[in-house]
Length: 463
Image 1 (cartoon, rainbow, N blue to C red):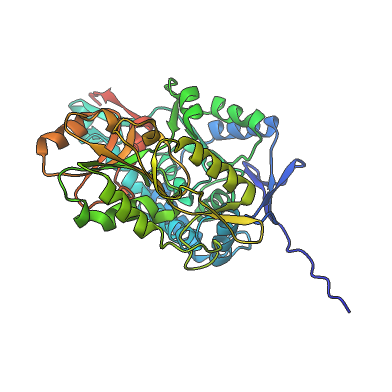
Image 2 (tube, rainbow, N blue to C red):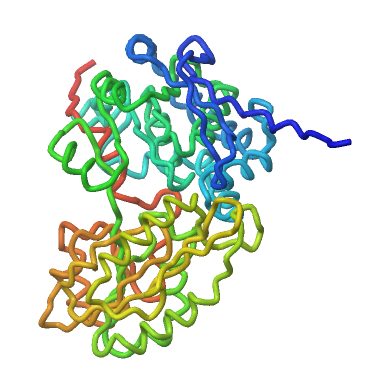
């Protein structure tokens, strides 16, 4: 007798509006990396978005001490409790399977969300100018003082799906008193859904934070209906929103490492970590290494180290590389091979796809050497360990290092460090053996979010 195994039940990710969970008529299926249906995501219509945002605008703001306590409770609920019937370990497994990120990376990122929620109130207020107070009732306003206040009341987020850690940042908006609307990525909606349910269980009202999954036709309504917004995406997103004072784009990182002298051998572990950790999917992963002198020895050593990374399914505890459906993996491979034309391949020159036999494929590392510091490949960022190694000299200056989210500089030249810090398009500068993936609560990522959300107003009073 043949036994027929029923397919696993889909996990439902409903919208979370101001009146609770909402399962829309329009739903899409999110498959795992092997193409198996895993999640059913509700997509809400325009009217639902507009009514939700109106409710956020009409709501009051929770007192500061209540916000701080609720955020800390939410962090513990997110990690320790079953949320919407999903225990933490099951949630981590599902995210790994649908996103293709190694399960250890997902678990670490999710635990990081829990820690960040506990710390986010303190971290959010790191952006406050030291001369400013947080309340007009502060006695210092009798003599005249700056009061740090919000630029609006409702903050919208178009979230990315490349890494769960992106959901730590918008928690700071809640800490500062904003009501928040999140449009999740259709690639990975489980993390924001779980986080918002944890926030609500911890004490945030349904009119304080909402989850609004939509199709692309409705997405801009979320931005238009908010006071301020943050949007993740590629260069097209940056070009679309970069000139708006209301929208903060979060684009490609193009993080880099600069090594002067012949110091790279003492820092090879750091370089490997910067390129390959976190599944190499984050904007803080290194995409280019510029080295003074001949880049070939560094490229060879880096390729030797990265070549040992195993090809495993994402749910394997030893997995370290991202996994995609075969078709999308092949498309990324073809894009890489086309852009690498003219470069010297030390690893991945014949391709980077290793199929796992179930419809999914591992994206293996690639190391290419280019012949000059301003080679166009330096700006190519891909969602797996892909690094370009280039020669650099003082004659090249800092121009090849511009447009960088994180730059780690291995140098003893203090004057060069001064120039790097003064360059407006280099967002963060790390020194010595600090990997580009370093990030802790309270340390700015792309400046402090509070610099965008808040402003100072002068208050002087005689009463």
